[in-house]
Length: 101
Image (cartoon, rainbow, N blue to C red):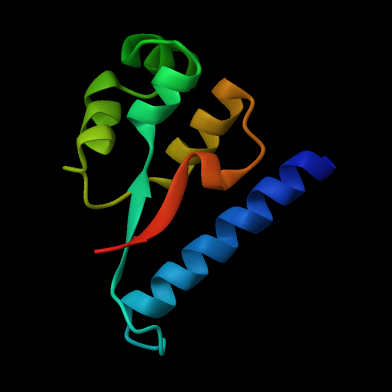
């Protein structure tokens, strides 16, 4: 695994771990957190359409739209990886963040 990919996955797994710990009530964090996927921000930043991101990442446009609108409750980890690869993103925080509810 390349160092860039290793950093990406380390950041990704850390965020998921924090989210799972908080979701299961194992955390002493004061506020409930939610996982936010920044699809709209990414399409604006990289000046591409949702359709183009769909083509580059090989993710159905309907799934990307659901992620962008927050309607999708579960996030396929493979989607995050594909988006990162499609846009050459090495920092997971550019794609998703943990935010207060």
